[in-house]
Structure formats: structure tokens, C-alpha cells
Length: 273
Image (cartoon, rainbow, N blue to C red):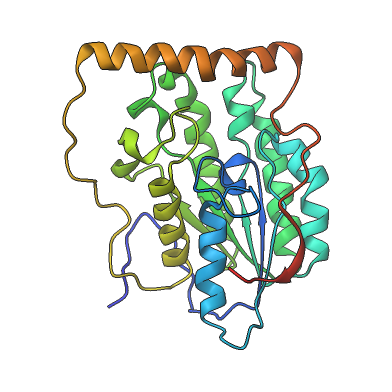
């Protein structure tokens, strides 16, 4: 029996795809997943590509990943969406806007406008477009509550795109999945997914595309032994020094972790995972 859930908008039919393009930022690039032999992170999008390629043993499946860490929604629209649309792929995943929301003074109306324009451009070519709602930062991050109004606004906006698309856009709702409150689904930087987090997002995308799964990706991990106060303090200090400090430094100087970095799979080529 197919694994369905009221908070994931699933595709109406189990369409067999021959091509897939991933568009977005570090979330889609695969930051902090296991490393591939070529030095790139694997990521949930690669995991989705591998599953879809396995459905076509003739080797007739192609995959491109244009996502680059640190990109704002305007950069995604300008640098990735035209290329993705020109590839004429049957499946496109679109994730973006969270880097904008994390910055003080975010113009959420502008983010909505650019994200909507990106979805419209990609849907115009006839592709199935998968979009995402963010996880809930208020449940796991100190200070995450200040991000919640913008996160909820984007959530409603993305769900509206899917609702109005006639089934051509589908939404993976990570916001309501409590498993993502678990620190073990996140990397040490607390911003990017761990390998287990990427694995679960891949299952969520495949579910939204009508693929049955033997497990529910929302199931919480077994309880972890509570960390002592000293260990927690050491981890917090390491995070401040290693991750938060450099992130703030880049914001103050107008730099991005993705500056000058090319996509890991810029061309729509046969996938050999």
C-alpha cells in the first residue's frame, strides 16, 4: 500500500521520468551529506536521481544539479532557472528563499515574487515541479521564532502554487514533520542536513512523486542519551566559533560561501550513480 500523508501533496500519477534537474541553494546541492569520490556532497537530490534512474534499467535517465550553496532567490532565478527551463526536463525540484529569510531586513514580498516567477517559468515547459516548505526553526533553533512569520508566509505561498497548478506542482511539507526537530538530522553547523536528514528528504520527495516506501520518513529516531551540560556547552561554543562567527563575517562583508563556485552537475547527462 502506498505511503501517503495529509501534509505531503502527492503527484496524481506515478509518472516515469526520463530527466531531472535540481535547482536551489545548499539544501539542494547536498551540503554536509556524505562525500562522493569526486569531492562533491551527495545530497537528497542525488539520492532521488539514483532511485528514479533505477526505474529505467535501459540507462535512459538524465540528471543535472544546478544548485549552489549560499544563493539567494534572486540569484537562483537569474543564474539557474533559465538554464533549467532550457533543458526541457520532465522533473524539476525548486527550493530557495531560506537564505533570504535568514538575513535581517528580508523583503518577503520580493522573495515570494521571485519564487513565484521561478515556479511559473519552470511549469511553463510542462515539467512536474517539486517545491518545499521549510522545517520549523522555532522548534529547534535558539532565536528561530523571529524567522517564523516569514517561514509561514512562504509555506502558504508554496502551497498556493501547488493548489493552483492543476497537479503539475507538488509540495513536500517538512514544516510539520517533527523528526526534523532532532539534532541528529542536522550537521554540526545546525543549518544543513546530516546524511540521515538528506536520506529522509529523498524519501519525502519520492513519496510526493507517488513512489511507495517501506518506511515513513517522518518517524522519529529512537531516543538519544541526553547530553550533559558540559558537553552541550562545549558543542555550543564550538558552533559559535566554527560556524556562526564565519557566517556573520560573510554577511557583514557581503560575501557568500558559493561565490565563484560552479554547480556540481551543470549539464543534463546520463546518471551513473
